[in-house]
Length: 307
Image 1 (cartoon, rainbow, N blue to C red):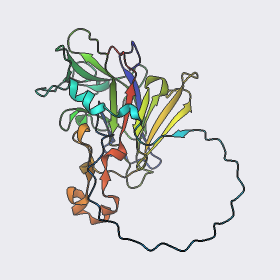
Image 2 (image 1 turned 120 degrees about the vertical axis):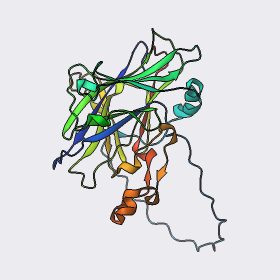
Image 3 (image 1 turned 90 degrees about the vertical axis):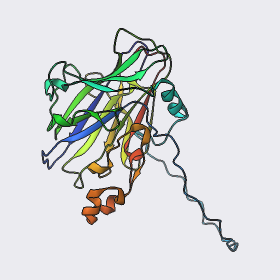
Image 4 (image 1 turned 180 degrees about the vertical axis):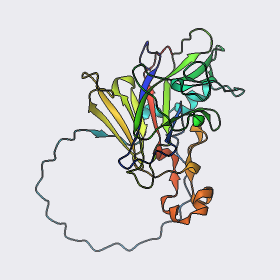
């Protein structure tokens, strides 16, 4: 987070032109992920010698053409700033951590009562013993609508906050790391991951999108096989500020419940054989395998944050 900041805002949207209003879409929020860790490569066969081809006459060099200046920047891959994210996360993870969802009432829509937030208590433990919670709240001025708030809250292996968003709506949420008791100071690097962006088979029915203002983060890691990530778009996400730009993340890959990541630190590839729905409906095998890393983004925030 930028120095002195306590949180960041992100807008989640479910866009549709032929809306079905069945279940909404689930957005996954976590901190560090293994997005930028290399997968173990499959063994390669020894190369087969090939005969040297006869030289060919190169075609004439075409006259240079003038390319139009891009209006947006599509970013793919992992900048070097993300090289040590796993080691930094491990340094503040508590092997004996017991993450507890102490509040699950985002926007006052339930399913629980009490504070209007999702709070995952005990998310991190700093070297000095300070316990940090991940907290998600609806930003002031934004309206939250959900098809099924029972989906909200702690998800998977415990490092994910899930938010269900109703079709054809958007909501801006504030995500923060807060000390369970008192304040805290931490000089290391912060990261946040958003993952499991996908669409329905008919993209007119549901597409998951997110938006974050560019002055809230220092860098972004993402792949573009199943996402379109566009930086430098004019104005803020909510249109109220004209002195900043923003970044959008738009899903382009079809997704299913069986490909939802259970652990942000263990994003991998889901084969059809790993998905009961695919085994039961062979016609959807064309959408597999699903690489969970290709549906995730990770933001790096400047050092010196207080929370």
